Structure formats: C-alpha cells, structure tokens
Image (spheres, helix red, strand yellow):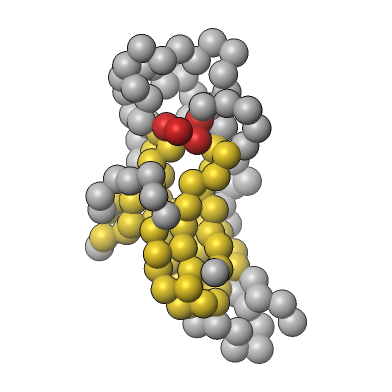
Length: 124
C-alpha cells in the first residue's frame, strides 16, 4: 500500500475541512491562529521520512505572502515564520501539528483579492 497522511482539526480527531474562510481581514490585522494536525495513516509500517510543513500558493493572489506558520509548542504556536518547518520522520500513527494565520500588512486592500493559500505537509 502507499504512504498516506490524514489531516485533522485542532482537536486532533475531527477530519479537517478542505478549506477555511477566514472572512474579511482588515489591513494591519491578523486572523485567529488555527492549529492543524497531520497523522501518518500509512499501512504496512511505512515511515514518512524528513517531513515538513510549508506554505503553498493557490492561484494568482497575494495570500501566500501573508500566510505564516508556526510549530506546535505544548499546544501553543511557537515562533511565527514563513520558512518551512521540519518535523523529521513519522512512524505509522504518529501525529504532528502546526499553526497557521494570516498576517495582513497595513495598507493592503482585499478588493478583488481572495488571498488564497494553504499549509502543505510533504515528505522529502
């Protein structure tokens, strides 16, 4: 069987939605941080190697540049960043979490801009 990962909401049990609408975020403001979990649901004891979370762009908009991610540190967001977060190897049933938020700089307008982006889990 193939390697597989499943995504869950902040409780680590509810399957995650395919997308989220953060509503209107005014310039100079941030969205409420959202924690997401990923679980190695592979079969046959498949280990996911050199895993990481990273930001990814959806279409032609500036949402990607405003998305920040943070490692999960005892249930709270660690340092917010735009670089990928390395989480190492994950054995079957291991789970890892990260946080996401939009941080909209002052002076940005949302008119005609959906600001789409997402957090991607990937294996090297």
